[in-house]
Image 1 (cartoon, helix red, strand yellow):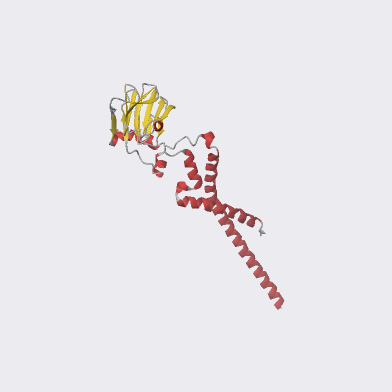
Image 2 (cartoon, rainbow, N blue to C red):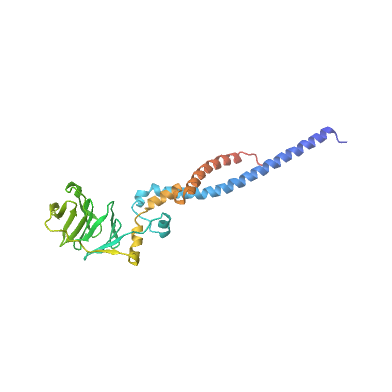
Length: 262
C-alpha cells in the first residue's frame, strides 16, 4: 500500500531530477555560447594583438618611414591621383612635380607644404627645388644637403623662379633677384621663364602610383587596424565590444569551472 509519505518522496525525487536536468541544460547552453563567443572574440583579439606587437617595434621595423603601395588599401583611404603633373626642363635628370611632390625618376625627393615653383637639375650631381619660402639642394640620391629660407632676405614670397646656365633667378612682388654664392642679390635682367611641360590625360598614368604611394605609412595602417578605424565606425565598436567580451568570458569561464558536474 502506497502511503502519502511514499508519494511525497517520489515527488521530491522527480522535482530534483527535473531541476538537475534543467540546470544541466542551462550549463550546456552557457558552454555553447561561451565557445561561440570565444571563437569570434579570439579572431578580433588576435588581430589586435598582432598589430600591437608590430606597433611596439615601429622603430626597428621602420614602419613610420615605409609606405603602403597596395592599390585597394589606398582606394580604401580615398587617396586621389594628382591634379597637376609637371615636367621641368632638366636636360640631365628626369624631374617630375606632382602637386607638391617632387620625384627624380623613381626616387622621392620631398612633399612640400607650399606650391613647388621650380625643380631643376644642376648637372648630374645636384637638384634645386624652389617653393614660395625656401630654396633646397639635393644630391642625385635625393638627400638634402643645403637649404635657404628666403623669408630672412625677402619681404614677400617667391612667385616665379628659373635656372639659366646654372644661375638661379626668381621674382617676388617687389622685384627680380638672383642667388650668388649663397646670397640673394638684386638682378638686373628680367626673369626668363624655364620650359615647363604640363602633362594631361594618359600621360599622367605612369606617375599616379608613385604619387599615391607616399600618403599612408605602414605604421598608420597598423594603428588603424589595431583600433578598428580601418573598418569604419563599426570596426571601432567591434574592438570595444571584444574587449568587454573578453572580460565576460573570463568571469563566465570561472563560473562554469566552479559548477558541479553531473
